[in-house]
Image (cartoon, rainbow, N blue to C red; front, side):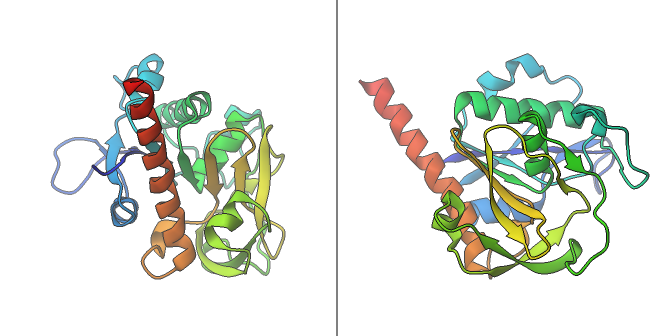
Length: 242
């Protein structure tokens, strides 16, 4: 059976063909997980979801994908909003932050993307640069080069040679959170990937789902997630059988 990957749902006020608000996931994320051998399932987090139940709900999955999205409310990391900051729905913030705490506590294999990295950094006590100044690297709706740090877990997955990524963000890590290690940067020094030093969490600032079928590095990120999830599934079954 395919490992079950929880894709944290995004709240949407309206979706074509539906009468009401919806909880959705980007199709490219589902395609990327499925192509890597996983079974993507949307994790519901609507207004009636009980967040205290979240760790138990997540424990039924083999891995977690924390996707991109809108800006996290800067109050969550102790700042006032920049004029260019556009906070998401507070219930979305509640869900994403709760998911990040749960995967750290449970040791769930996790890949965090864009906003997902920023949520992870916030949960670990870090802060964000709320609006990147224009410069030589096109972070908002562009492509640029990143390089994984040699010897890192990320480099073991994507290699240590520079490669091009699809980028869509105007915020980035400022103060790094506790127990996080920077493992990739853009040429302007912007943090592009972090990994947790003890938990099974890898986070990237770019959007690997955009190029997963043409970029060997981006495809490898999803295969790595599914492989880690499959290993956890096998280990859990072995423990239950013992």
